Image (tube, rainbow, N blue to C red; front, top):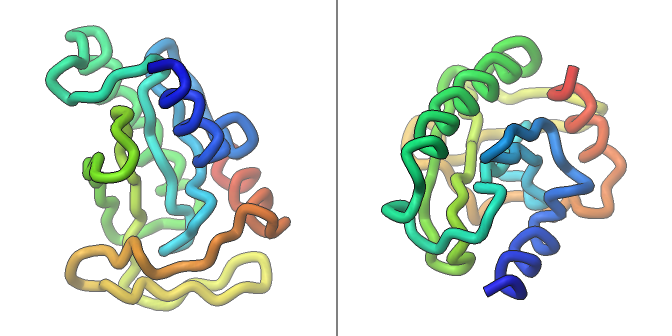
Length: 144
């Protein structure tokens, strides 16, 4: 199962795009951005099912969400934040954290639209920014 965990971390470039890390969770940007600041909150150990999360990891998840929400409030000020647990492609326990905006956003000379607003986030929409230097600008802004 280690190969799957490593593949997840590589796909989402967790180390390179890391914003914050606790004992149990890592918050990192999504390389494919559907809204300004789209990110991933992932467990620091291999875990394929939500029900396999420990009580300590669950308590730490709540604290991680509070931290994430505080950083968004201090930077991009989204109207809402959606946490999506899908697991259809990547079996490792993680949540897509999608900040939601009711108006277009501007950051680092780029225009951002939440094409799913006010409905479900359009996670299939967005640019693969893995090699875009603006992704690191977003990372640095959220890090504070």
